[in-house]
Image 1 (spheres, rainbow, N blue to C red):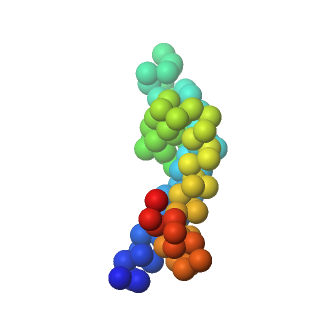
Image 2: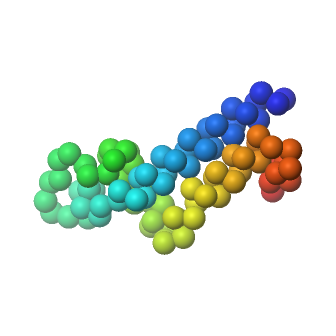
Length: 90
């Protein structure tokens, strides 16, 4: 079961990095519903998908969305290290 935990940890930490990049490069004018002008290409560093992910994270969670990548990294580290194994039980 150790190999599966490693894969989950890598996926969680990779998702955390992508989410952080998407949030840091978020521009409200990337999405058509937020402006009347067309913005091609998207200014978000992850692209249109990153713009949508950042928009919905900020819409649902608010400014606290900037904490989500750090929580995902912490959960990912819990899959690697036995000292943080209690995190997997949450």
